[in-house]
Length: 117
Image (cartoon, rainbow, N blue to C red; front, side):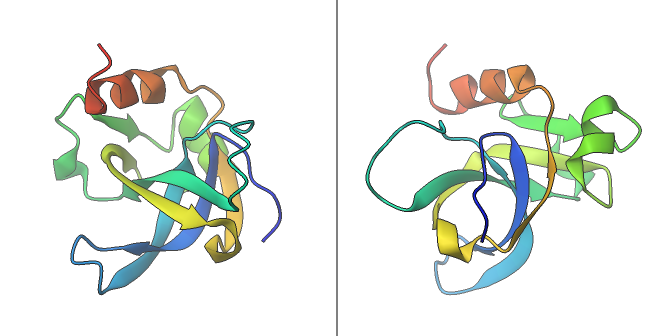
């Protein structure tokens, strides 16, 4: 895997909540690029094409016809779910498919999810 940065959308086997199964799906890199933890890992938010999941303050809708959607590399209108985060080893990230040009709505959703508001 090449290096990825905050705001990149990459493909990864994302763990299901049972921690026994996983599904290859897009994720959004949400952690800081300069956290310097010494560990080769990134914190990612799950991306889902199930639009029924959108109506919650921890989730951000990405429409393909929007600026974000056109840069995202996603194939469908999707929901970024900041309430479904995982820490993934960087070598498990398959490839970067796109980038979110603005992270303000993601940051707001993360603040809600983490109780920082």
